[in-house]
Length: 447
Image 1 (cartoon, helix red, strand yellow):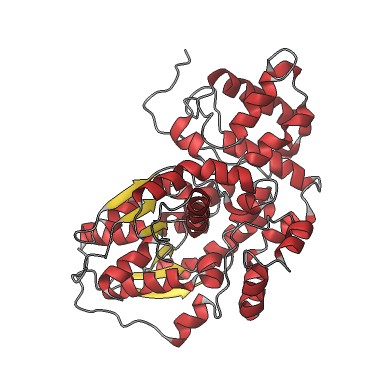
Image 2: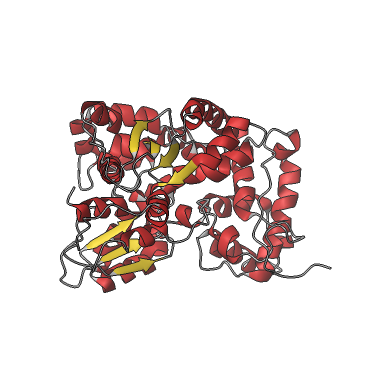
């Protein structure tokens, strides 16, 4: 007998992307219709992302008001609006495995995109936006020019970027470092505190594309905090985690990246190093998505079991050995946004837990989607929708009026600030430039 809901934890199945049936258009359509019909009858996810309102409007406006009168060719906008945040799977849907309905909406949207990618339907400029390694290297090499050209408000370049690449002229885009985090680390390494309770721990910071090329301050703050707590850290970046390619359904490339990165990190793991990811999307890939894409690769599984989100890792130090003393109160309270890809790791509010070690500092937690969705939210056709989805988060942040607003996802944090600007700050100052919670921990240490 099939029972709705239950107390069992959600279970995800390996993604059978190497099987021919995975790309069969007729089989895909059958599965889309099965899942969409279940979603239509439930509608519990109506307020998560824009996929579900689009789906329900599509059905409600159909001649019969049911899925049977909806043309499959009209499914595209529903599939496009999924940002693979996993929140429907993790927090809302009562029909995920082990339920007999076996419903995994995000991975079904991923399958639909994989079919489109295999059939050459992914746009040229959409693919170029996902080349974070190439774009990052070029952007850092010509950081002055790159940051000028991508600056919001540049009337010379941003309209052209919108016309050619479909990037909304008002969307905040990440800046580029003058030097990569890797080069900065090679030039100057923090001194390890040998008197710290956690002295003896060893870790590799997986720089991630974002910190390596766009915001080295996150990596520098993490290095300083780890060194203060006795952790010997290396900074390495064997390549992109593949999340941008996953969003487009380029499964073979993501699998290749998983294998090569896992092979790269295996010697470090064998030497007793933990692997720490600085961005939750990257941690999610290494810990959860890669083992589903390459379930038979021993090194991928070993890497997954050795990977930690930076906030989670620092909390583990606090719980097990204890943090080094010297944390001082900040000059104001903190609004911390718990990113969707941090929530999808099922580890709790680690960013908020970490920040609560700062004495006499009030922490206000926001646990809701920012609306950004990676590259999705900067596109012309999505930008206004992305702001709308993130408006409840921005409204809460404005109401809090905290001098610090941070998120585990730096892109989400910038998007939240754009939403706050659109609402108005109620005559309060714009929040401090710190993006990531670990930057505030470093600030509290006086680093």
